[in-house]
Length: 144
Image (cartoon, rainbow, N blue to C red; front, top):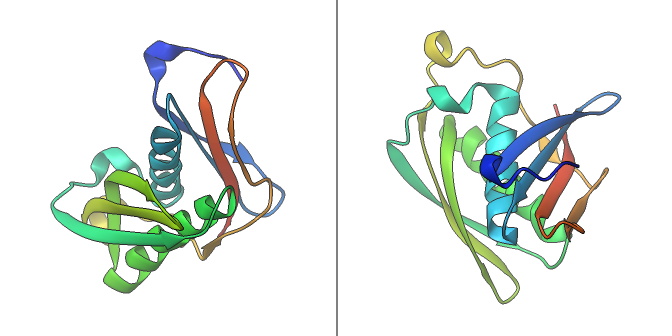
């Protein structure tokens, strides 16, 4: 993966046979997790079109790589149960997991034009690590 610090933090999708890979890259583990959550929103709609009007608290439990799956599942749960999309996130790592917040708005089908519904984060291609260039990577495949 190229290092372009001017473009950080950033998110991307990567190909997977049946589902979609989401990847966050940042200067810190926090930034990478946040960008992975933005990539998750981008599976459904363009995050730039989601206004950060309402805040929702997020809680994820787990350690190491598993925490990324729990974090993304917490975002998916709130998207599904509240019928919202999110465009801005914050996260703090705590003992046994993470606490965070997501900002977004209710889904407006005409404006957001959701493409798919994300069902869950998976352990497929799961990785949370510091790369040789010093940047953090947080990625996994999400089930659509």
